[in-house]
Image (cartoon, rainbow, N blue to C red; front, side, top):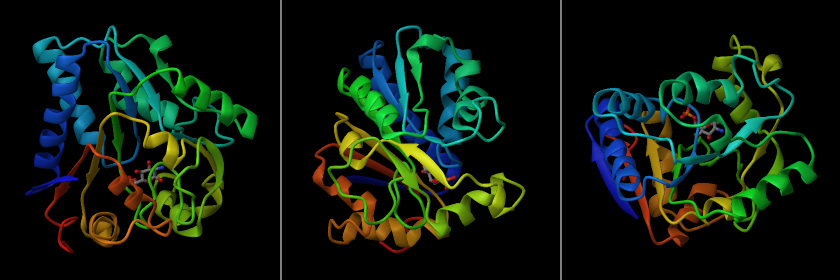
Amino acid sequence: MRVIVCKDYNEMSEKAFEVMKDVITKNPKAVLGLATGSSPEGLYKCMVRDHEENGTSYQDITTYNLDEYVGLPKNHPESYYTFMHKNLFDHIDIKEENTHLPSGSTQEEADTYEKQWDAVTCDLQLLGIGRNGHIGFNEPGTPFAQTTHIVDLTPSTIEANSRFFDHDINKVPKQAISMGIGSILKAKKILLVASGAEKADAVKAMIEGPATESCPASALQKHDDVVVVLDQAAAAGL
Ligand code: GLP
C-alpha cells in the first residue's frame, strides 16, 4: 500500500484527484468504481472543476458505484443515485447510460450487478472507509471473497449515517445492496480516501493490523496496487 498523508481534507482531495486524473488521462475510456459519503465529495469537486476549466471529458468513461440503500426510491434526496448526480454526474459530460449503481433488494439482483461488473475491467476503484473499517457496506465479518450482496447494516453504521436522515435512526434504511470485498479487489487499482480523527482506528487496523475479516478494509493488504490518501487526523494512529 502506498500511503500519502496530507495536512487537511482539501489537500487530501487534491492528491486523490491527481491519482484519478492520471488514470483518466492515460485511458479516456477508463472504467471507474465510485463511492459515496463525505470522504470523496472533495475529490468530486476537483473533477468538476477540472472538467469546467480544462475540458477533461467523461464522454467515454464508464462508472459503477459500490452500493445503494435498499428501499429508498432513486430520487430520494439521500439515495446514492441522487448523491452521485448532485455531486458529480450532473456537472460533467458523462453519459447517463454509462453510469451504473446497484439497486434492488434480492440476491438475484445483486448477482446481476456482479455479472455486469465481471464483464468489465475496473481501472480505478475509489473507496472511503467506515469508522468500523467497512468498505462499501461490507461490515466486519464479511468474507474477503464476498461478491455483491444484500447487507444488514450494523447499529454503528446506522448511527453514523443518521446524520443524513435528520439524526433519526428510524429513518435510516436497515439494509443496503453492496459490492463485496471480492468485487472490490477485482479492480486494477484502488484509491482510498479518509479524513478525520474518527477514522484513525480503522485506518490503523487497515494498514498495520492483520488482514482479518473483523476489519474489512484490511483485505486491501491483499491487493498489489492500493493508494491510501489520508489527512493528518486520520493518520494519527500510524
Ligand atoms: C458509508 C458508505 C461507505 C463510506 C462510509 C464512510 O456507510 N457506504 O461507502 O465509505 O460509510 O462515509 P463517510 O465518507 O461519509 O465518512
